[in-house]
Image (cartoon, rainbow, N blue to C red; front, side, top):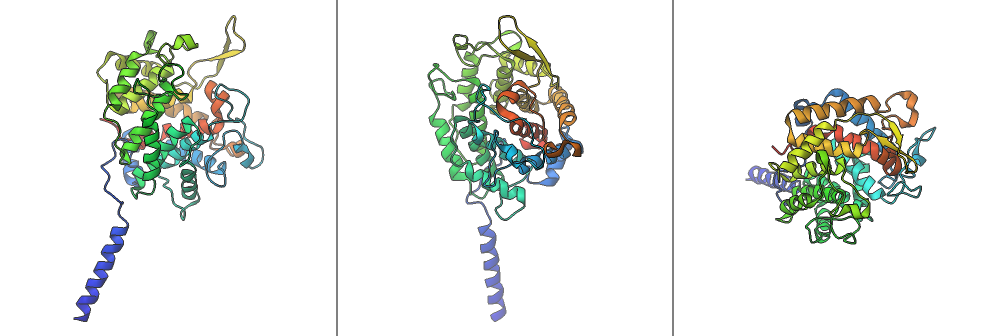
Length: 399
């Protein structure tokens, strides 16, 4: 009798250990977040959607650069990151919201983007793991209390992504708490404005970040509002649309000095693709057409405009814009994805700092686009470049 009892006891202990390793509750299969923790599946998706060994090597170099310039306690500071440089300091620090030479106010948002870049490559948080895994663990903890509106959205997306990938319940409470806060900030038009309702409605850029946060939170078990897709579509349809699919920043934006832009049209295409709404509408088709006609080219050209001070960059060297173009074209698929991602690969691989002669900047991308120069800096540029190169496996294609 002793042997069967001992065997039964061992079986019970093994079952208890197995149960302890399971998620606190079953989550549905992610609708958005890609299966990046499975290296074999990641390799399959990489080949299927146009990634290469070169794009993966670029991602790894970029993550190494981010890791070298992180804060000891986790997170990144766009305006002082180069205090961590070895040898000659990297150039390109972040400034104010409109390019003012002031301390960067959105380091929590920068941290969210950087964490998403690591998670996108399957680097999960682990306090006892590799140096990069430890960094992700510490950085996620800093994101549990974001201090800016932009940081709130990106922190929610990062924590939700970590929860959906890890599936252990460790980040669920924080992700859901931030998602609740985002939902509580919805305006009467059903969407969001980063500075509240003082201009009479939501704005396109902040709504895009909130949409991404909530579709990620959904994968972490959060019940998103039933009308999220419809309200977002209605809001986008309410905005002024100009020639070629350029879209307004907000309703009645001209009275605040805003004219319709390409980036707003392209981000609208990305939102609709992520939500699966309005896909047969004329506007969405026009915005996808705009995306396809705005193929990335890393070209720097400055012009002066009579009656205006300073110079203005022409062309589409704008990684923020390319980021939304990458998301929109990936989910739309077909020749749009092939041509768009082909250009993304070409330009990002050609312009990454990857020589030993680049010193501490090796692995990063120069912040040479208008927004990246004025506001985001090198940390922002590098995180966005990594996320674009990870797109073949970072998200689940909607169709």
